[in-house]
Amino acid sequence: MTSQAKENVLRQVKENNVRFVRLWFTDILGFLKSFSVSVSELETALESGMGFDGSSVEGFARIDESDMIAMPDPSTFTIFPVEWSTPESVEARMFCDIQNPGGQPFDGDPRYILKNNLKRAADMGYTFNVGPELEFFYYKDSESTVGLDNGGYFDLTPLDMANDLRRNTVLALEGLGVQVEFSHHEVAPSQHEIDMKYADALTMADTIMTYRLVVKEIALQHGAYATFMPKPQGSENGSGMHVHQSLFKGNRNAFFDKDAEGHLSLIAKQYIAGIMRHAPEITAITNQWVNSYKRLVPGYEAPVYVSWAQRNRSDLVRVPMYKPGNEKATRMELRSPDPACNPYLTFAVMLAAGLEGIENKYELPEPIEENIYEMGEDKRNELGIVTLPGTLDEAIEILEQSELVRKCLGDHIFYTFIKNKKMECEDYRKQVTDYELKKYLPIL
Image (cartoon, rainbow, N blue to C red):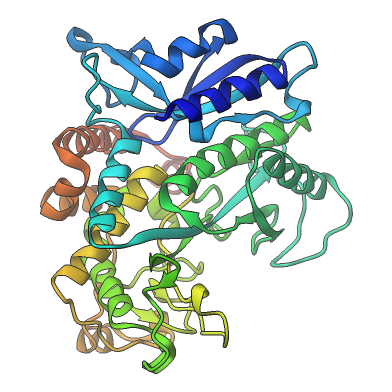
């Protein structure tokens, strides 16, 4: 942290009459945590961080080693829009890196884990850029799945509440410095999407945390509820977070090769091969909830089979077609993650898998351009197409055997995450669902 960065924050605070600054960080499950400091404490916070009790934060410290330090990152300083404050009480926020009391990075901090993996890429000469597409639903409240509209994909619905929510959300995001490319109605009734311009992975992970909060806050302000739950309704498409990704060397897109077929470089092919080979291992991170696997089923546009293609949207990986003169847009799209993941850990494991492919020169299999859902099992076996895990239990079993993910996340997060997810699976197994009551109670 440079003295110039600190001075810049203090200057903006003074010029804009900021009274409180919220310090943000995330637990290992991707839930946003926050506490506020008054401007009188801000200089101290920027200099030496703010202490807090880490024993109450999921995946952080045990009660006998609970002291932690939240060190603000001044590059993330943002003043909240006027609608979120009053002239007498302007607020701002900064993301924090979590440290041990001695000042060393805390190995249970997801932001630190992503930084570690980005350093590995940087040591190889790469910058990791991502452009996620987060889908979500608007409902009338958090107690039901009664939607606000009956629109479909790209529908121009009448000027109802959902349109107001989406427009106001875009304005709020732009007020927080988030670059929005476009927004539209998604496939399912009351399902929407707001897409952000691609950025480096750390900036984008921070942005996703902001995005999810803003979407929910704007909905609440209008008496509605927004959810990033992967599959809230069994009969409708679930919500995904397709992640477009590429590696740059300086200003040059390392995924582009003007002489290669489809203009896809060898580096890009090896990266995609790494993602595909390790996809089952990273699925517990990219799809971390019991409910995530209700979305990963055939027939609802979510990927199930590990394959790639340029046009086929039933594949796990899609490579958008090259547009002449737009070399920087050459990228791959991973379609399995959902918007309820921890973005720091998700970007970290995706990058680790891709870099593994580059370092070990993995060979990319042939693309599958036909509809895999309509193939027979024998044909899929013949083509060597494997499937993603079908349940969180299965995903955790595969994760436990993954040396790649353990190295990527470090032992602290790796084993704590697995322990937490096993507890979730056990809690789920104990539940008696409406489906069981309706199906079995009348006949057994």
